[in-house]
Length: 446
Picture: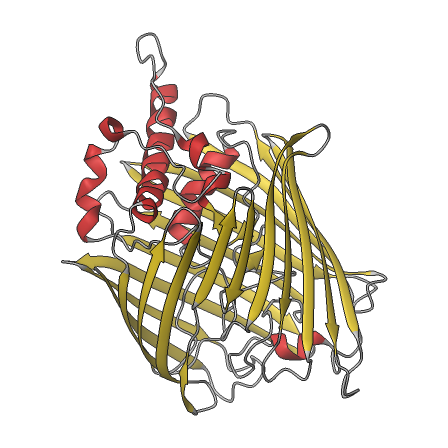
């Protein structure tokens, strides 16, 4: 198995070629942890039982699921209108995913230019690429072949502390040997099932330099299709010197997938205690019969930073359908703490996982929240425009606050533009007054 071992159904995808001038594409060996709309399509296929392998960790290698997205022939004669609508919904998701994988295979649009601006740094830690700095100007070049892939990315930005810096975030070198993939670089990761919450490994303001090794396993009894990832990184500005993590994921049947993660943070200088954490996440696809919907229940359970007791949990439901040929995904989540939750998060990795981009280099999660509830809607229109809406109610120590966020993504010629706004109550930690945030993101690929 190699990077370019993808097959593409040309006749089934002619209708998608119009996306060449609008959809962000990249010549990478994986689906990156930055596009909630593409993840929504992939999740719809998984929830409908179309995929053999799990999709509960990102970046996710194309070769782990691409063959399962081959175009399907449907016998429309004799089918109910509901079943035809369901086939159409899944075909739309399938075409979106295959188009992006096809672009990666042929090194389409290897040059990137990004411009971000926000009047205030982001505080949300949900899945996606919401700008987490005041402003950023960046460029990148990437390339993929059978045996290796690389990306050279650089940015000049002003971070949440007001410091201007030149960085190499997003750069990597990946070496492929069949089922093995070895990677050096600074890349975002997302481990787990959540969308607005993450108890394991979430998006970061600044990914730390890391080395990782992953293996794609073939089908085994009990495990089903599985994969193993190990990561060793050097966190920056966190108080910890090293961070090691391992994750085993499997899908014994198409309706159920789960993952087990272990992480350890070490500090040889003794400024902080050595911390470790176990976590388990799972997703169970629910029956839809012949209705045009794909949906699932999912959960995450995480221990405290002594790795001994259950500290916090997440439960959620997510479903996708089509309304007037527009894809709509609804996500409901609730995070709750348990008896094992620390009375103080000082001297734990959670200090570097605040709901703020002030802390750089940690694996930012929502672990530090006492309780949190959210509802989000992701809508993709057939003209490649997309809208995200999110409402959340958060609790942390003596603070209780609300967040609301909206963003609109639209293609303009060869550029993808995203406009966004959010509102946070004045009772949020480290927020003196009610905070209204607006941002603009400009992405060019060619």
